[in-house]
Every structure is written in structure tokens, then in C-alpha cells.
Image (cartoon, rainbow, N blue to C red; front, side, top):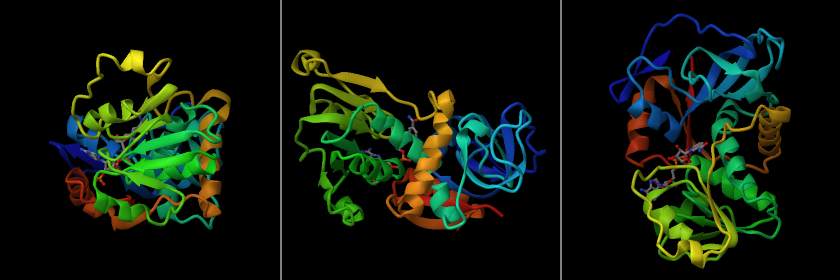
Length: 304
Ligand SMILES: NC(=O)c1ccc[n+]([C@@H]2O[C@H](COP(=O)([O-])OP(=O)(O)OC[C@H]3O[C@@H](n4cnc5c(N)ncnc54)[C@H](OP(=O)(O)O)[C@@H]3O)[C@@H](O)[C@H]2O)c1
């Protein structure tokens, strides 16, 4: 298993994780390097398990009998107990879905955490057909999925990129308008913010009356400021905090959303743009590269 140590990670021999209730044990074959991992590595005390995405085969069923049976190939979101960077990980059955053989480990690994976040951000906007949607951090793992899902839902989508050069990464999406923060012009009915700081402040000035700004991130780690007249100038607009793990147990929403993401990716309607796949031995280097903003798209880890 890989665990945290002083702002980075190291390999450690640990006992097999013990599961209880609705948790099942997965023999892991792939995970991802995501900004959520980077945040927890920087903040967590030494010895904490890492890895939010899990792809593998169910090795032990959930104690309460819920979820897929032993031998099923699955993808899952280890929201409650990060630990995907390990040979075996515990995942709650409400955040696990079977995946088809035709879906590669790399693509499947890029879907759970980022796909659920993208869906949660878009859900904040309600009915999206014909809506004007802005996604900030559009070139990141979550942003790439958010722009595609918004497009599939019938929205007019704009992706905010950090520089003109970053547009290149989104060229395949000929339906997408791309803008930098300086170029962006509203109004937008929904803004999914994946950056925070100054980018969030700028985005908030672009929201339509009764529009929604869904804030999911503090990637930029700066203070966002709200102009004094924001509330008066954007009547009925809402700023909401969104977390991808909220409400997913209700009516098996987590499982259904994961199944949807798998189905869309399998049928090539959703592409998480896996730009690199590396052995988990390179996890520390990849985390450092992510911190320097040198990674684009999503990088997956092969666990062996
Ligand atoms: N609330 C939730 O439930 C939830 C769930 C998942 C993720 N998140 C958060 O969502 C955020 C995005 O996650 P991710 O995995 O997509 O991250 P990512 O792959 O690292 O992408 C980050 C995106 O933000 C841009 N960016 C980074 N720093 C920036 C800055 N200072 N100014 C402007 N743009 C900047 C990046 O542009 P460049 O390509 O130019 O670097 C990239 O487009 C993270 O903060 C993550 O923790 C929240």
C-alpha cells in the first residue's frame, strides 16, 4: 500500500483492510492521481492511505450482502476510506458499480471521483436542456467530464481555460466554446467552478439572474471575493457548495450514476482523456508533477 508521509507518499506494508457493514473488498488493478489525492497527501498526517478511485475485482463481498458478488469487475469511489493505491481496498457498495469487459482499466479508473463530481456540479443547475453552462478548470479531470456531460444534457457549454495554449486540449470538442477568464462573457445559468480563488470571483460576475454558481474546489488556494453589489446585481442567483459524495446512498443514486458513467464511456459518448498511465511506483513523482500543473487530462496508476 502507498501511504502519506510529510507531504508526499511512500510504500508501506500494512495489514489487509478490515471491512464491515456495506463495505466490500476489491483486488485493485488501477487507480488515478487526482487533485483530491494531492490535497489529502499535503494535509493528512503520516501513514494515511491514499487513492480515491478504485478499479478491480471484488475479492470479498459486503458483510451485509449488498453490492456486486465476488469475482465481479467493478469501479468504485473510495470516498469514505481512501485506499485505492493498494493491492486491496475497501469500498462501500453504494459507491461501486460493475463494469463491462470492454471498458479498459484506465478509462474506468478515471470515472468515479471525477464523474460523480461533474454530475453533482451539473445537477446543481437543474434542467440543463438549452441552459448556458460555464465550466472552469475545463482541462482538468473533472472539468473534461463536466463539459461533455453538460453537452450530452443539451446545454450550451463554455469551458474556461487557464491560458490560450490550454485550448488545444479541448480541440476535439467542436461544440465547445473555450475562453480564458479575461475573455469570458456571461450571462450563464449555471457555473460549475473547479478552480476557486480569482477564477471563482470572475465567474460569479458572469452568473445570470436566478442562475447558480456551484463551487466544488479550491484548486487555486486563493481567496475569492464577492463584490458588494453582487447580490443586488444578480437577483435570485445562488452560490452553492457541492460535494460529490453527498446524497449518493439515497435510492442507489451512487450506483446508478456510476453505471451511467460506465455506459457513456463504453459507448464512447464520454471520454475522460486519459493522457498517461504509469506504474504505482511512480506515484510520488506524478503527484509532484500534478502539484506543478504539468499533468493534463487524467493520469492513471497501474497497481500490481
Ligand atoms: N467537491 C467535490 O466533491 C470534488 C470532487 C472531485 C474534485 N474536486 C476538486 O475539484 C478540483 C478539480 O479537480 P480535478 O481532479 O479536475 O483537478 P485537475 O485535474 O488538477 O484540474 C485542475 C484544473 O484547474 C485548472 N487550474 C489549476 N490551478 C489553477 C489556477 N491557479 N488558476 C486557474 N486554473 C487553474 C487547471 O488548469 P491547468 O491545466 O492550466 O493547470 C485544470 O484545468 C480540485 O480542486 C478537486 O479537489 C472536488
